[in-house]
Amino acid sequence: MFILPTISTSFIVISAILVGIGWYQIVKGNREAHQKVMLWGAAFALAFFLIYASRTLFVGNTSFGGPDSLKLPYHLFLFFHITLATVAAVFGIVTLVLAFNKKFAKHRKIGRITAVIWLLTAPTGVVVYVMLYLMYPGGATKPVLDAILGT
Ligand code: HEM
Image 1 (tube, rainbow, N blue to C red):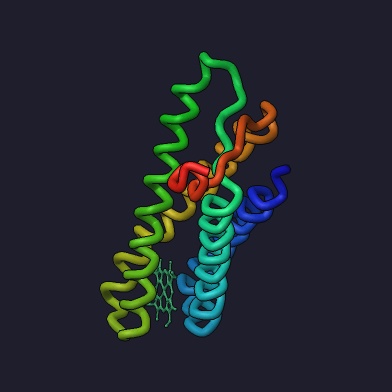
Image 2 (tube, protein in one colour):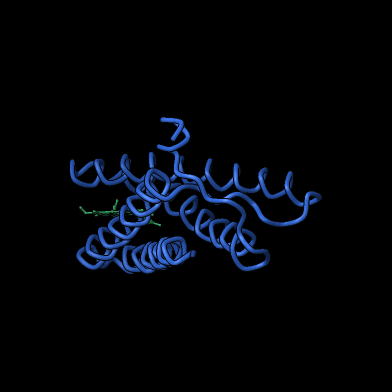
């Protein structure tokens, strides 16, 4: 069963596309469209995170089901993806706070970094999804809560 990861991965892709459109809008000087599209981009990113976090808690994380020779490369890549996503989330919050406080010069500087990191995060997320669910059958799935409570 990988319906939830399919939905959450689609949300990352949609969010990245919206950030791309939002960037294009502000380069054209379209402030209102920029604000609207970026807020939708942030909403899809948040929706991704909520699905991912609740699945991690209640359903579990799926272990890599591919050959042993690919386990280390897969985990290194997964770590790279998680690091990018975490940095993007922190930068995203800072970017939004700067926008709402009308600190637009800083917003512009940080916003560019945020957008680039997010545009890199999305494709790495798709690669993780393809390796974990499409190239090989996913391995065992265990809820984090079970692991913590020992149930
Ligand atoms: C996480 C969401 C957002 C991201 C990633 C983002 C990203 C960016 C980027 C990359 C630029 C600079 C474009 C360039 O010069 O190449 C920019 C400019 C700007 N953004 Fe955002 N933005 C976001 C949300 C918002 C929101 C919610 C608002 C409105 C409250 C906003 C208002 C502006 C304005 C007014 C500028 C132009 C600043 C200037 O001309 O100095 N942004 N944003």
